[in-house]
Length: 349
Ligand code: SAH
Image 1 (cartoon, rainbow, N blue to C red):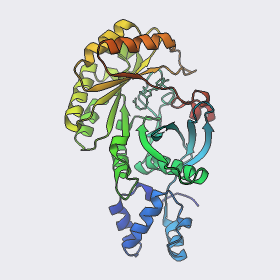
Image 2 (spheres, helix red, strand yellow; image 1 turned 90 degrees about the vertical axis):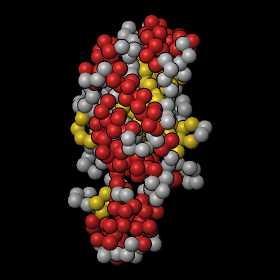
Image 3 (tube, protein in one colour; image 1 turned 45 degrees about the vertical axis):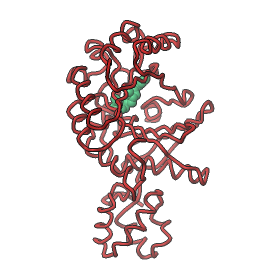
Image 4 (spheres, protein in one colour; image 1 turned 180 degrees about the vertical axis):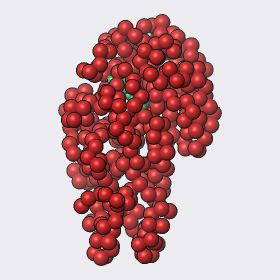
């Protein structure tokens, strides 16, 4: 069954679903039934409490979720799963499911590729092909939940979501925000936004907009440098916004949402990993309600940048702790399955 010209049901709010159902000449309570199926990512053909006639009418004009898991890899080390998804137009994106004691986290993509151009990142190597619809972002969660239900019935499914896959969510602002509302909707996935993180390279004007949406999502900011000179070497976006503007927007976000901001800091050998850099970073963040996630760089073969040793990572973290900065080392998961952004997709293109 093709997708062309059809309505993507998982991208509709409940109100929109109701309007859609009415437009087909059906009564509004069908929307309740449909919503319950959509939440499970069921195909129209499986909706057994709808008449066959209605199902075939629906199949002609709509589909539930256009995102399909085409390939999956499971880490033997920690059970992390990596997915290659296919979109209705044949584009490929990827995602990662991380297993934690307190539930599974899914990392979702928001664009096919990315146009931010960060020097260490594999997702941006061929630029941005297109942005995803809210339904395509949500569809990743639905597809994975369905896989979990099929393989291990009764398991809870995805509990936390991080918008940290390929793409810059704030460069796809409207669909990313729409996705957040769908995730949170009572008749949708009904996941608390406290369990959702949005990661940005720091598009300052959009950070202000997000702060004003009234969505208490955790904001992660990819800082990766203690000053503008170093940041410009790693991230072209630093030419558009200085660190002081990024931090000002972060303070606004903290004030509006009451939530602490997370800073991502990837250690790049010879660039940003000296103890003096840790001191400079601590100076920047002093007194801010924030947490730093230190990530040893995941080396990407197309990129010249190098990672750092375990010892360098540990001493960088220690120095931040001495300066009273709340900090953790981000666990590297799925090292054996190309866990880092964009690597699996590239190897399959
Ligand atoms: N565009 C968003 C979200 C996607 S990237 C952002 O920039 O935040 C998710 C995180 O992974 C970011 O912190 C990004 O800087 C980091 N990242 C990308 N490639 C990496 C690599 N090779 N090693 C370590 N971290 C990387």
